[in-house]
Amino acid sequence: MILQSLVKLYEDLAAQGKIAPDGWGSVKTSFAVCLDENGAVTQLIPLVKEVVRGKKTVTVPQELRLPAPITKTSGKASNFLWENANYLLGIPKDETEKGCKDASERFAFCRDYHHSLLNDAASPTAQAILQFFDTWDVLGAADHPAVKNLMDDLRKGGNLTFRVNGKYAFEDPVLAAVWEEHYFKSNGETMQCLVTGKELPYELTHPKVKGVNGAQSSGASLVSFNAPAFCSYNREQNANAPVSKYAAFAYTSALNYLLADRDNVQHIGDASIVCWADGADPAYQSFSFEALFGDERQGYDIDAVRAAVARLAQGLPVEELGLEPEKTFYILGLSPNSSRLSVRFFLRDAFGNIMKNVNAHHDRMEIIKPANDRFSTIPLWALLSETVNPNSKDKAASPVLAGAVARAIFSGGPYPASLLESVMLRIHAERNITRGKAAIIKAYYLKNQSEGCPKEVLTVSLNENSTNVAYNLGRMFSVFEAIQEKANPGINSTIKDKYFNSAAASPATIFPVLDNLSQKHLRKLDERSQVYFGKTIGELKDKFGEAYPARLSLPEQGSFYLGYYHQTQKRYTKKEEN
Image 1 (cartoon, rainbow, N blue to C red):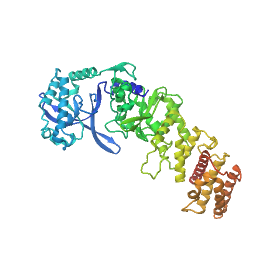
Image 2 (tube, helix red, strand yellow):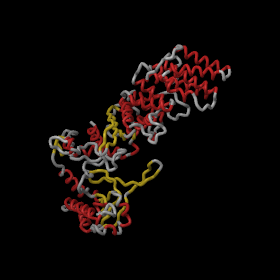
Image 3 (spheres, helix red, strand yellow):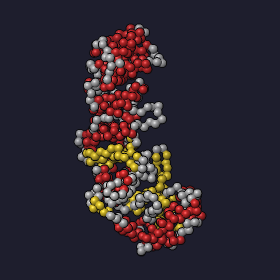
Image 4 (tube, helix red, strand yellow):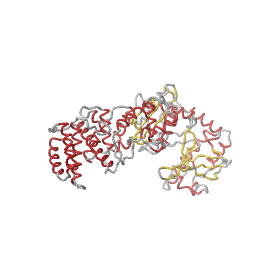
């Protein structure tokens, strides 16, 4: 399903002229080797462009549509009309390469390869290129006037291509025809393609996928068989699961196209996430990053996005953005795994259904927020950050947890238990209930229902009518904390520091102590405060009686934390109103 969807995306992009057709690829190219009609090198032109990355402006190689890159394994192999300086000019990768032998051999291989394709080509461009290969002095390459000032850059491994009399060689129709004839004739043995279902020449080693965060910079394989243990029936490499050369080129080209645009790649945990819609409509892709991840780079107004998501969730189109709920939408998360890629998750559904799941998630996460909180809705990255130790050097959430949470939100499935466990661990360690942690507890138990944390406590703000014991115990702890704070302003060690975790786990042991302390603190307050707090404590005790439960289960502790959070936010709200 993944490969079929990517092949369809490739065909949509190719039809729009956004991606190179079969046999051609987008190649990052650093230099153009300029030749005259006799094949003499006149100059090397840098091919770079400036792009903004974060706060910096950097120069990167231009991307040109060149003959498709070959898959290099061991041994020598050359691309057509382009290569690195090691092959195209015979320049060693570094000064220590002994006697330029390896570079000379690679240059000779590249020369013979071009002769095999261009000897019969009736084109002045072809003849100029062949004359270049026949006359170029490999041993004196470093001293050539066009080369010597660029040696450091050439040794970095950037690609070079030919320009003959001011025109790129790959633009010559004769050379383009030569390449396409060679490409399709050299396709070899045929088998039934598992992607297209057609009898076609298969690809023994698939092209590399580049741009996945944490994977090898030279690219990694999504599909590969590189050990005898994975092989059967004497089939080697990808002949064990035959994918045609066309399909292999198509799916990797589409994936590389998505990953090449950093503004449309989201990183969650160790996963690099890309999205697309049927027809390769960019409107869905750009909107989805704000809607799915809370990514503010796309320039959408947050309230407008929430309104659009709610409309799509109801099955209604958003005409001003060109979005239809019936459009099929895809979300793919890829993670690095040595020299391969692993699929963290893959979702395919109607765009409206995915937005419905996202909208339901935001509704579940909605909870009263502090005045200084800048998020109207909690984005995915902020949700995951609640599971991380704030004092840790590595601020990234667990990759497995991040992938499982993202999949649960987009598919509408239950939240993983590891999400609640991680938040509970952070609460026990920090003794603090943030808006994000309270929202996660509320959302988790709304989706993964439990009797210990019933719906009556899973509210946006304080539910004063709830009779849930654990919830009201949490509220009472917040009241005890408020009494101590008022009686001893600026105190260094509070009851929250000493008793919060044990109060949530073993109320019968801790609450009599807290009750006794609160009476001592009350005697320090004015009469009006004593009446107010005494009345509040009395009302809470009436909800569960004088007997405190011996222990609270994990769901009941969730109720306790929500009661504490709701009551605390009410305290702060009243302060601001006063």
